[in-house]
Image (cartoon, rainbow, N blue to C red; front, side, top):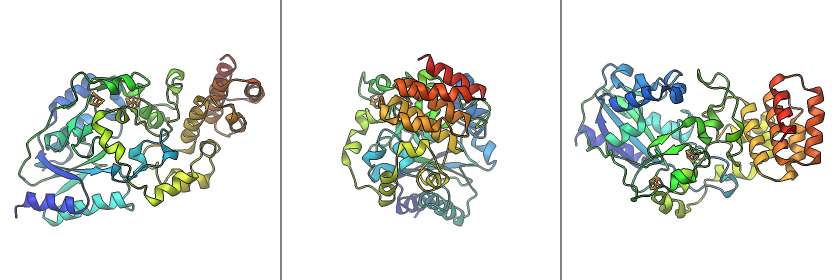
Amino acid sequence: MSLTREIKDFALDLGYHDVGVTTAEPFTWFAGEMESRREAYSWVIDGRLKMIDCATPTSVMPSAKSIIVVVYDYAREGFPAELTGKLGRLYQSRSYVAPHNRIHGARRHLYKEFLESKGMEVTLAPNLNVPERMAAARAGVVTFGKNNFAYTKDAGSFIVLTPFIVDAELEYDEPTIEAPCPENCRLCIDACPTGALEPFKLDPRKCIAYNCFMSQDDYAPSTSSHIAPEIREKMGSWIHGCDICQEVCPRNQRKLKANPPVNEFLARIAAEFDLHKVLLLTDEYYETVLRPVMYNYIRGKKYFQRNAAIALGNSGDRLHVPYLAQALEDPEPLVRGYSAWALGRLGGTAAKAAVEKALSRETDESAKGEMESALAM
Ligand code: SF4
Ligand code: SF4
């Protein structure tokens, strides 16, 4: 059996959906594209991820010869209705950049150990951030959609791609750098609430997912906790991710309709999930309900609370007013400010009175500004 065959068999045996192999040649087109869009993407270029540098695999691992890309189909389990429209399916699956002591992280680690046992030097994320969708298409395991997601034939775009750089020469797969979308289809582009998409191009600054996660102070050089009011209004009930441009896609319908059973752990989380509790977040709720699922981007309770305030404000339901009024007393100015925004958006006498009272005692300038804007809505 060839080494490449052994490598592929082991990945499939571990439960990966597919595996492909490509060379470690630089992703020159990708690096050029990133450079030309530096303003929109400086958070992944100048921050920890160093996406332009990583487009040259030998700059990450000088002995790099090949990239093995494994594909995990995360929609093999179901998703509970309670979390639909609030948490992206990818995050519900806990399969994206999972820590080593969780099942999906352990699988990645086992695969790395296997490759090392074959005498290879191996590098993978977080030390490796090669453009994974490009690597996967060059390794023949995905094609593209106009929504920029990578698709496999059987699992649609509900997949996690993990590249491993190795120092061995292997047998390479035929690239599949193509986009087999139905002719004239633009359902994803038209469905995006914020207008973040054009064919094969995303403006991350408008994307709901980006705003949920990356709008954090000091997350990357260009990020801050502020979310523009015109984006907040369009975030709907999403607090961690957004699946809209994948949900409408004809290439995902078979998978969406499959409806497999929900994993028991996720069902437990879903049963306890409550936006009021996210807004008025306690340490215990954060540790037992939010962190086990949403472990990978948001660093700090206040960002979950801000996102919950936005979701409640967008609900149009004034039954949420007492909870938002209580959040006006939160120690974090960010939470007080966004709760005021939500109250302004819901409107009504009780909401207005709560914001007026909070404004009379507010000392933080940014929260004050949000409260004044809320009263002017
Ligand atoms: S994830 Fe949501 S906001 Fe972002 S591009 Fe897709 S539909 Fe638009
Ligand atoms: S919605 Fe249509 S255009 Fe968009 S990715 Fe799916 S098939 Fe392609």
